[in-house]
Image (cartoon, rainbow, N blue to C red):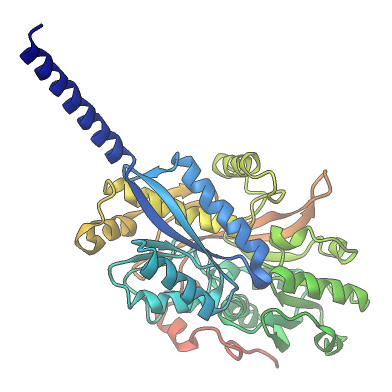
Length: 417
């Protein structure tokens, strides 16, 4: 081969190598997505499981979406709105993420929704926040929530506990947006069908001493309605046991979640039969749910006996995030117009049923009425008693009637007498 031919051949090889390297670089293009959960404070354990749910959704995609390698930029909150916004701002403004998943808790969701309005070129997808006001009344056009919210989760529970004979109850709940939503979802039907909530004890998030609350529980109520989560729920249950409390309970969606159910203590046994409701349940008998549970257990040896509510919610919101990226082949141009249209059209069969959103970008789906049951291995789980399909944010009421009632607050609804 002549010298000229050898040089030509080498140039061809070099060019081929550059093309190959360029193709590899393109194949390995990284898209950073922010991921916020409460890893500090009373919801630290739920936050850890929320992260597991998001990680599982990404693992199912082999770490890729829209033809790009996905890298989570994980940031932490402590269940307070200020910390949630500060952590979100760090991911958006410093790390320059174009998509943000989170937060976990109710008032955090409202705060992040408001921050989203200041960042129109970033798309925000909820983690597990369940406060109504994150999507109702004053929604942000770039904030999406693929899960149903706290009031939707309690639809049908009022009728169920009335059938159990709980006609007169006393409420103990954390004093912020998510429990307000849960209480409204429960009381809207409970009060309408003749139930009475004789009084409400609203406690600060992170309460450690429940002695004064326990002392005020009336002797003549049929049951307690307890809407506490994380360490707050464990602290109350432990102290109520120590005080000799014996009233049956009706639990909020996070009060008898896996992050609480398997705490150690004698009071734990009294939780058997506790009625609750939520967007998923440990005993759902479908191939999709069974696969989700099996994949969770195989992936996270340090997880719970069954995925928590938070793992489930972060999973479906992350899956929606990634599915929409696939639908537009990773195109986030033009203010993410095509991506947001794909999010609006997202509809898939999730572990606990169909996942879809309404015009306010809020989930519409099934609520499961449950009761706490003991498994053969001694672990506790929520057994499905009944399912209520296709629940919207108006809780099955005509929109005008729902708007007249207003969003849940400390005083709305009310049925003391």
